[in-house]
Image (tube, rainbow, N blue to C red; front, side):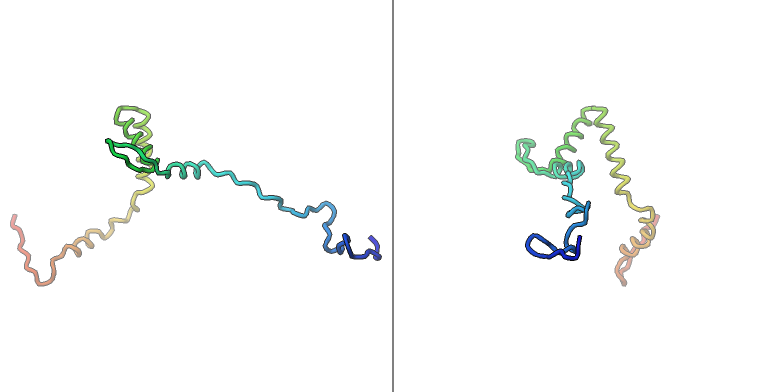
Length: 127
């Protein structure tokens, strides 16, 4: 381009023009994020539904109904349901197990809690 380029109507300054081969929107339009299966399952399992149990209408989350159905199948002797239930129970126990040192000092704390108030006479049992 020459030095005689005049800025004006439909003639932006050179500094404001896009360079050759460069997009005006380099990052482009953001892609639509599809919901994950995890999110969909959480949403569906938390839905509250009305069911009739023992002749009474009850509102329960779907996850409760799934658990009840799984337990009913296992109670009827369905081997796969029993295996699934056992696996779920093991995973939940492992996830919610207390840390190994949770009983440290428990006896001392319990003895302090169950001490009689000062000045109380305690009769000892004879064995």
